[in-house]
Amino acid sequence: MHFAHDTQEALIAAAALVNTRLGGTDHLRSQADLDAFMVDNPYTGTRLRTEAELAQVRHMREQLRTVWDTPDRDAAAEVVNELLRQVDARPYLTKHGEYDWHVHATEPDDPLAQRIGAEAAMGFVDLIRGDDLDRLKRCAGEDCDAVLVDLSRNRSRRFCDTGNCGNRAHVAAYRARKAHAATA
Image 1: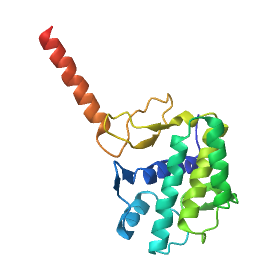
Image 2: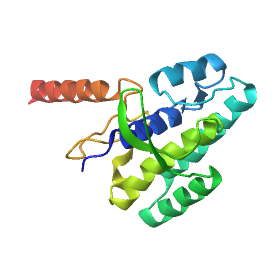
Image 3: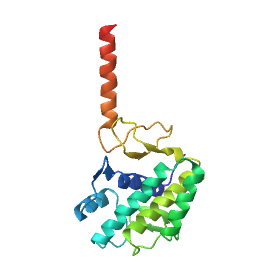
Image 4: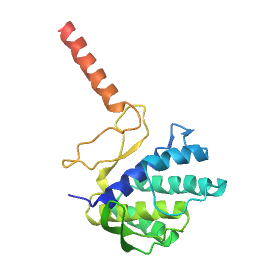
């Protein structure tokens, strides 16, 4: 399935936000951390740069994480519907910058966490409608709890981008094959 650019960006940004807290470590503790997140995952609109805004974004991160933790499509639809109500999503078409017509679900002056939640929820809506919720995955790395969005055509992505999980798994498999060949 092909996803619109805004859907892809919203889903990738949602995963990136969820992955700012991994293994008990919070990588979204300061305005500088949020600034770094925003460089890689830009959102249009107002940015207050307050501690309250940072706290709201961290709270939204935990709400988005629940979508990855939801066991099935029907339950995910309930979670996403609640998120859409909470952020007061009001979808409209817009175009700006390098992007042609796409959907925004909140106004540019709405709080940042609300805009993040609305954009992510709209991406989740597309996954649920297309019966593609299985594209939301957990990293297959043994010691990794990161989430990812598998946008590959054949749904074969297994490892996150947050660490070196895929490379470590491939090296371990190579070494195991070499060790097995040496003993055989």
